[in-house]
Length: 418
Ligand code: AMP
Ligand code: MG
Image (cartoon, rainbow, N blue to C red; front, side):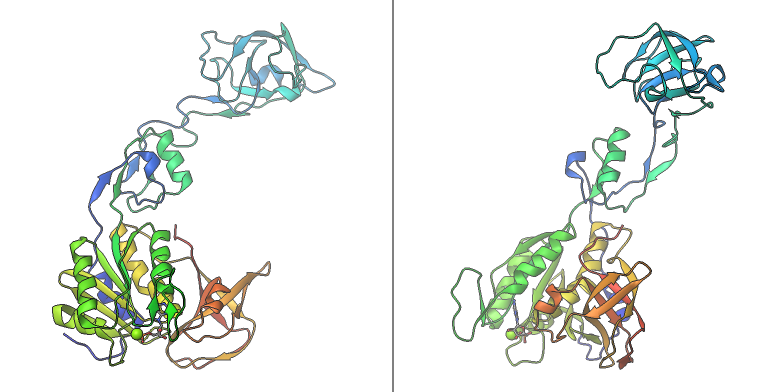
């Protein structure tokens, strides 16, 4: 059904999100899970650390024995042995006794604190030095000092990571510490991408009169990869209905989760992408009240969800961020969607045209707040001002003038949400 009204961005996103569901789950070796989205809640089955251990290289002591110790009045303790990382002491400390202990080594029973080696008469940087019979402790200690208690980091039974978390290095570290070698993660979305237009050339072809190179095919594939999706690039489709249908059929054969195209969706006589979707699939909407990127097609080609982005490179990338990104994030199973956002104070006035506008800007932190300045021409064919930008500032629908000092929402570009 064709819907010839200008949809708001919010309505468009609502229709889009109804279509996408998280993909099936697979088990993967942890080394392959970076940036994948977790498909299970992770409940710790052990305490971390699993045993009380020393936070410093030093001497395990009974805190009361050394209370009041100082450089001027050290306390002498008898050294009963040494505990290396990985070892467990079979000896329990008695009063007046100490054991040399390494960082991470098991705290011996009878001791409740560690005095760092620098605060003892054994202070030396010499590795492999012999164990003294006695040690002078030159600092007082309280129970628990420099001791990592069992479960101080994580208690068994607590949830450490939730379904829908995109796994960052620290999350991977936590899974490793808990011994989770094969977590359940969602399958990565696969999307077909192709550009349409008689004027487009592949990257390695010499420039011909009236032609330009296909910037969008590369840029959109890079944007998809950055979100953890797998782009499958198809050849450029010339402005012929058969060529467009041929590429779309190839995409269907590939079994992709989503088809994304650029160009061929506006009012031109040769804009066949929308026609193909209308004829062989289902058109949900095709115009959104947005700048840049008003002509935007969403629907299905045969049974595969389809998003046809505008051809101008900036429109293509901005509408990717606004519409394709949430689709991919939903398919990925991600709980948080969209880029990081902040508020920014405009450094200058400018005019807007009343559409919801996503304008190229550079934001800088001045110690208190973000300041924003537009990066130049907002013409949707000017890619250099997007190259100069690190954010998009959002001017709401209906606003025609922005003043210096006005606060706008700023979308920080090329960040994954956490
Ligand atoms: P269209 O949507 O086909 O009317 O294209 C709008 C504008 O975007 C035209 O100036 C096209 O030449 C340009 N354009 C379309 N596709 C691409 C592409 N893949 N890379 C760079 N520019 C493009
Ligand atoms: Mg065209």
